[in-house]
Image 1 (spheres, helix red, strand yellow):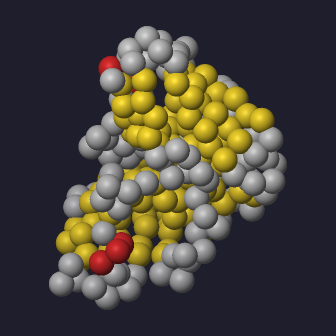
Image 2: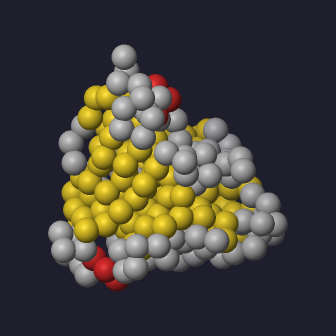
Length: 110
Length: 119
């Protein structure tokens, strides 16, 4: 099964809002609300920023929000800041205890 | 606080095996599972599999299932991932992550273990 589809890169100016999409199929993103988003800075382990489509873990900035429509999930970063420059990955449950990541999106703050 | 500590970097020749450890602390080890995720240089995250620390049940990703074995030692609160018949394209950072039910919800990550496969 191929990775979930994410745009390779998204950019925005400080203060702007950007949205990263994560497109799957009826068998994964479309079937379960077990969709997480991870932020990864260079040389670091990933960090959970959104779980179960739209739940924000304690300590994560409320500038990060998640949603889902059909087979596509989205991560929105509002009020873009320099520290948001990182790679972002979606991750979906596939059923049967299997999981899949998206290909990743590089966010650049202009 | 809950944390995962992984074993050190490894350099292996093609065809060899590698065994990576992931020691948990700060939480009840048997109440969660451990997933293994790898990342080749400059590439994205790839899920490899999951093991329940409660009962040892496993689920492996199809591409590696013939070469990987995940185990736990509950007395040491440690999970292990063995990957056999190593190939150069197995060169990657290998992460363990806490995941209760193998749903992709990774609140805690290890720092990663770099495995280099080269002749």
